[in-house]
Length: 316
Picture (cartoon, rainbow, N blue to C red):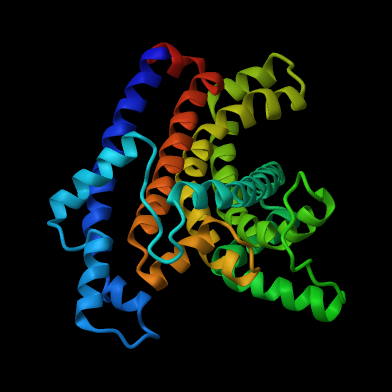
């Protein structure tokens, strides 16, 4: 198991370096000059533009800029934001917890709802309940999370006469207000993802329940509860875990739009603002951090295989 973890960490480190170089080049291909974006409302001379370009280090060759970025990153210095002049690291530390909280809550909604619906659908196969749940899953797959977020805002404000608090409060400051603010965006992200998890859980569960070892357990007199949950559900979760790990990227991507819709000052909203202002240092670290989180979660998923299926642990 330790060898597996080390191998995944090495692969993750190599992938992050590839992402870093790719992003460094790709970001600078975005149309628009960051210097002129910062000075858009001011009448300045070409000399001032050249001075600011040199101040931001954009007059240097690309390889030299990348080398300077790596030299600073090793020391924990990711540069300063073009827009605000604040250290990028302090902005990330300030806004990352909100996005992590939103992603964790959305994943909790998706996994709980998806596995429960998929298991019930498999156990009640071809019943009216199964048909209703399958239709609901198809509808969930067809709805973009940002559109569902807008629908939830409209429904709660017009029908329920309730609007989430506008001023963000952290969970340590005001837990009740924090959960009220996170309720709708977490539901919008989680419900959409739960539809695909439910369909995958159902198909995997049906495959496991039709296997020989399940029939053997029933022939030996094992209770249906033991058959379904201790053996059926546990073995059917392996492909579901793989899918969940992959979908972390989709959840993180969904936060970019939903944090704008719900006015949440998280990392997703920071990415949107950084793209709009051509803030290269901030955008570089934000997207790289998304990649690091995605890789870390997939390493956790790989390691969890050994807990769910000991045969995989022995194989590794």
